[in-house]
Length: 112
Image 1: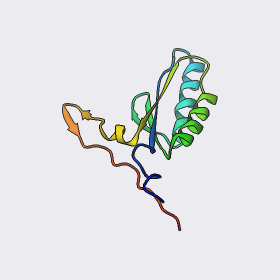
Image 2: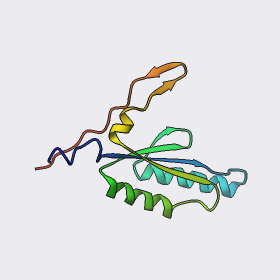
Image 3: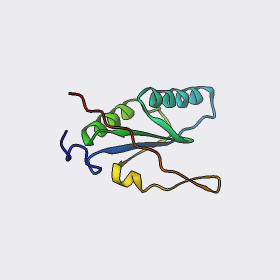
């Protein structure tokens, strides 16, 4: 792989943030189904109602965005954000009042 393919500006993260109603049993089921869909698609829970996934570029980001769009519940708000890998490196995380170390980005696999 060339250096341009592994550029921190080409590699991306997709964040899905949502606020879904759960006042009825049907709405709660739809919210659970949506969360399970995100996990099945390889997203990790970053915090409550915020899920993140590493993408190998803009094309893969667009693919996951379309998949999320096709699985949206009937009600509620869903926001999708994209960050380059370089931007993601600058995220500061706190747990309680302690600063947490940055997450390690996934290792790149090179197949020959």
